[in-house]
Amino acid sequence: MEPEIQKLDGGIRKQNSWPVLRKAMVSDYLKEGMRIVITGGPASEPIDQVRFITNQSTGELATTLAQCFSVAGHDVELFLGSGASWRPKTAAYFQTNEDLEGLLRNVRERGRVDAVLHAAALSDFGVSRVSVSGGILTAAKLSSDAERIELLLVPKPKLIRRLRELFSQAYIVGWKFELEGTPAEVVQEGVEQIRRNQTNACVVNGSAFGPAFGFCTDQGLIRTLATKEALSHWLLEVVGGAVLGAEDGKR
Image (tube, rainbow, N blue to C red):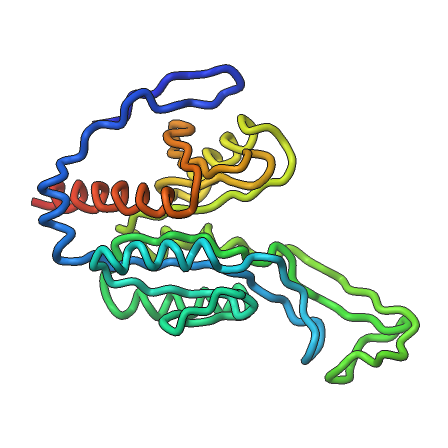
């Protein structure tokens, strides 16, 4: 049963009333535990053996999600960027996009994955060439005496485009963080991400959307959540309902 959606000005679509989930059935099913993969924190791109390019992602949201699903009794695999300031002992850590893809391929080989919450802030560009005063870098470390350093950055493949191939039956949620634009434009970008990558949902946030989080499907904005904790509990309910529905379809 689809949620009732109302078209608003600017293209945002808002939930009127989310159908009541079969809470007793969901609760009974979820007692068995789902297997959840969560990514978070920043990827890094090396410049030399001691320097790298990264971003400001802290890993807090992914850690909050992992705690929520774990407390509810689910098997959680948490993968965080090595630069994350939130560093739970239960997490595995990656540096580059490629490192994370390796972790995801490994977890797929170890059994069924029910859902993937892909909140990691990965690198859009990689360092293709480092030039020092007109010459190509050959040393392990850039000299502090170099007068001019030039980096050639090239686009990196989008890992989100490979998630459906890796986890064909999983409920996949991507993230879209934007600083510029209107809320309606950010929601539309989230919808396009879903359609382009064959994911199930997208969480939008950043100053362009506002102080909250927006949960989107390919139908548009479904729910706005004010805090990381509220978002975590909403995703717990939505993912549980989606997994239960998939199991019903197999019977």
